Amino acid sequence: MDAELEREFSAFIEARAHALFRTALALTGHRQQAEDLLQTVLTRGARHWGRIRTGNPEAYLRTALYRQRTSWWRSLKRRPEVSTADLPEMASARDETATVDLHLALWQALNGLAPRHRAVLVLRYFEDRPDSEIAEILDCTESTVRSQAARALARLREIAPRLDILATKEAADR
Image 1: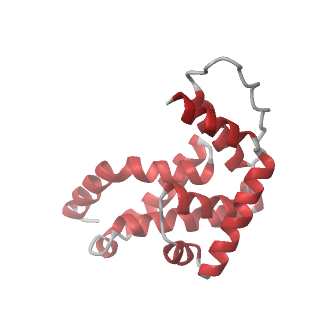
Image 2: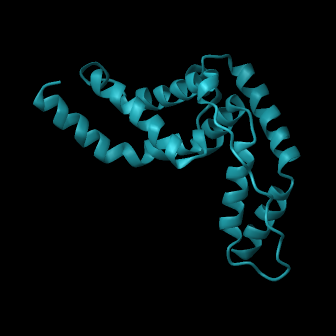
């Protein structure tokens, strides 16, 4: 990579790394894994910067994040065990940390989902992507995206029924 391309890539990363990291964190659920995922994708993106910079480089890198994460899911040696703790008991008095509780409970629940379900929910609800774009990123049909989203939401309700309680409590505290 020549000096001009390197400066351009560095400026892009400086401007968009935080948003890309949030996506990686939502996909993995763990800070260290998100850092590894983002670093892997950015390393590959740097090699191809001359080609991808003219289009939509952020979309290219986001797609690369999802596809790299999928690749890791398929690799058995990259599946570490993740211990999950029980959710804390609900306090009866007004809880000023309801928003934090909701976010923590949501992250724990997302970690309990299958990787493909998690990816569909992250793309649809965290990134507000349309089904057609999600289907393109995950290399499936739109009907598959819709069915995966429905199954993922049903599974979320099953493994984390307290999310409804926490969301209601957080809304009441506003």
